[in-house]
Image (cartoon, rainbow, N blue to C red; front, side, top):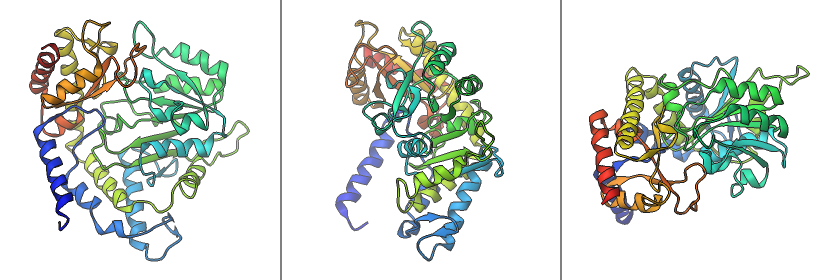
Length: 397
């Protein structure tokens, strides 16, 4: 690289990544093949439109790239092309979610999503996000005692509010979600069911987390977390979903129009190619073993931290993600201080609100930990047990 300033910064970041323990739940390490696709000549091509329907010439090969990515996405999650469609052009998870709302929810309509402070995402209707400025969020959360979802409460709220769409998914909720119960709630109140599986897509692909596809109408996901791909997103939609009067809702066509031309121009075909590479890797024989190890590592990390006296939200984890109460009603330290101390010790985590947090989002009561990245590096249970002990030592000094 001739640009020495950027080259120096890239090398510095490489060195940083190699020198730390990465427990960021939304990060991972991609393969060299993913990096090669991401930095390929595909970045030179402008490709407004969809395969076979472009607004620029010279896209025959690009069409093949994008179609291959779509086919691999459907195949990885065992979906039949006659029943499901997938849009691979969304630039990341946030615009993917907003595209779904733009396609299917009238402006000002109701989105029922998990509260940010309870484990949901900004784009599930939070007021500071465009999803909360253009649509009305009907928030749901966890039970104050168990810190897990109370489906009876969610159903009662859905029946009272009649949202247009219910979003099931999370960014800081460690337990399995009962997709069937969400389907029943959506059917009872007449809502579409959207699942945001961004955090657990790789675990679903690896067979260690229940698939939402049997029950959902729409499934969105990022590709850079447990799926171990580049920063991009996928939007799956049922082709056969019908209205109460029996008419096809054309979810896929509406979503395609919302992505382009509704929100975006030319797609990033280099990123789409890198997603295709990652999907191919996730379909390989070793990925299921990887996914199992991710969950096993998370469980041992949670168990050891609990043994050492730290409160684990909901009492444990069923995924790659752990939420730790470091404040513990004032007897410990804040999430920001915990994160800062850990970073100085070479452990990278993020401060995070816990359910019913009394502290501000900028300095909340907890931290979020994840095991996907270090599992990619080959780490196993004994390593994570030692990491828990190091975390305990750093936070108590």
